Every structure is written in structure tokens, then in C-alpha cells.
Image 1: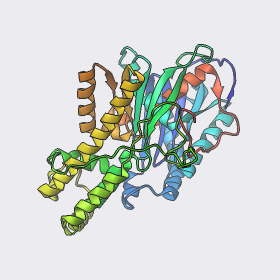
Image 2 (image 1 turned 180 degrees about the vertical axis):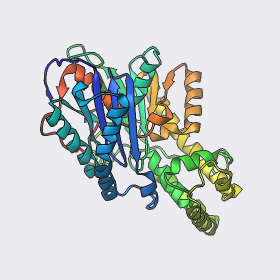
Image 3 (image 1 turned 135 degrees about the vertical axis):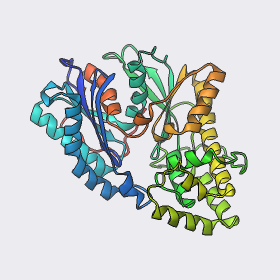
Length: 407
């Protein structure tokens, strides 16, 4: 990245492009606040056939979708490329091939229309989805320091958002992030997908488990989360791990969800549930029109299965809640922002709100439309970079392991 100095902001319009995983998205946002359009082409049905995202197929679909999605976003916004102040694109983290499609097309647009290019961290985008909607509602901004939980199929991170020192600030809205917690193995959304697959349910697993958990007893199966020990080797150096990068200063509040996935598998095996799982999977394959909340889908699950689902969700949400509020207390956060696909979970929202009310903390979630990957969040996060004149150079490329909050 390089600073291009103070830029001329004529319209405040930024075109955002998002292609980090399995959704091709484009959005036009004015002033980091007003989304004039938000178009998403989902590949969910394609990847459902494989029980998860296939990177090669995702890249191919992005190539097919990127041009019509951007055109539709510009059309719905009623603006032309000449009206834009900048074009923003997700540079990472994500799938390398998927990111490359979005970045390459964004570069082509900036070259053709002589617009500045802004690279955006996907994780920061999720945080700004919540902040953008709060500004749209004309709410008072949440006070810093602010704790952000980004929880999805690929990420489970806790960030402390703080105001940069005055000497560091080059414009309005300048934040710095500290990564104070993250998963050491599976992300929470990934655990949802894998457990749903173990139980013969559909993909993605989050909506299925959320809908069916309401019918079960969350106390039926006593899942437990062990305390995570610091990942330090004998010589005092943390081992290299893509999902657990070197920690920043201070205490950490890490997560681990691979153990509960294994516990669910063992429960299925020890309670003779394999035949019922196979029958459920076959039945759902015959009826792809059945939705997670439908009576037909619920009828496929006996009470034991519903209790297992409810207990799994209760344990996962409880772990996210405990770690988040413990971190908020430790770092003196004034409020909590929850974002990412798992932020759409109804039980998570209810329990986080109840605990925040009990503690007298502010808590905010994105709308359901902006919980999953979208481009409005990318354009919103790019606003402060436009204000600061912080643009990408010609060397911008995919950064699949891009971090937020430094090392």
C-alpha cells in the first residue's frame, strides 16, 4: 500500500467488489454509510452437492459472475463508473483463486476509468457492515475501545478496536486492531457445517442446526470445552500454524471447535444413529425443496437427534459468549460488535443481547442480509482509506492468509 495524499472526494461513491470465497458480490456505497446497491450471486447450491466449498469450482463461478454482478450493482445504484471516487476490492483473507478474480477485474476497472484502487481486509469489512448500518439508523457511534467478534465458516476471531494515537492519525475514523482471540483449529461456522453433515442435514449447516435446535433440549448432552493452553514450544517460540498465527501482546481468548465435532461423531456412533443419518440424508436428497424450518425436515429427526442438535448449538454459542464477554471485561471494551455468517444465528443473538443487557454493555449485529459475505461491507470499510488517501499500488495481489491486527 502507498499513500496518495489527500484525494478529491467529489461524490463519496465507492464500488466494492467481494470474491473471497463462494459469493460474487458488488455494491455501491456513498460516504461509507449509504448502500445504493448490494448484489450477491451465491454459489451455495453448487457447493451443497459436495458438502462444502470446492475452491476450483468457486473460482470458475466467480469468472462467470463478476461482470454481470458489477453491472447490476452499478445499474441498481443508478450511477456510472465516471461517478465513482474509488473502487475497493477484497485482497484477503480467502481462497487464492477466488480473490484473484475480484482483484483482477477491479484493477481492470481502475485502469480503464482512471480511478484509485483500495484493498480491503475481508475481516475488517465484516466489522464495518455493523458500523455502516448503525450510521444508517443515525445511532450514536459505539464508544471505543470496542470488541469485535468475527465468526463465520472460515473465521472465528476477536479483535479489540481502538483509536489510533493522534500522531498516527491521517484522517477521520482511523482505527487500529489487536487480535486478542482466534480459533486454533476449526472455525465455529465450519463446525456447524461438519456437524450438520455428520447428521445427514443440508449445507450450509448453520440454518439447519439453528432451526432444528428450537425443537430439542439444549441440556440433554453435556458438551464441554477444555481450556486452551498457550501454543508455545519448549524454546518459548509459538509453533507455526496457519489458523493460529503468532499472537499479539497481552492475554488471549482463543477458541477450539474440532473437539465438539469429534464428540458429536462419537455420540452418533455410540448411540446407534448411523442408519437414521443415512436415511435422513437420502430423504433430503430426494426433496431439495425442503427448507431447514419446514415441518417435513423436522419430521426426519427423532427427539434424540433434536436434543443432540440443541445441545451442540447451546455449547458452541455458550463458548463464543464466554470468551467474548471475558475479553470485553479484560480489555475494558465499551461494547461488542458481532459479525460474520454465524452472527445470523438466532440463539446467538438472543443470548448475547441478554448478557450484554445484564452487564450494561452495548452490543450490535448486522442485518441478516449483511451477515454473510457481501460487497457493501467492503465499500464501507474502504471509506476511511479513501479519506486518508491510502490506495493500493499496481502490485496488489491475493493475500489468502491476510491478517487483521498485526503480528
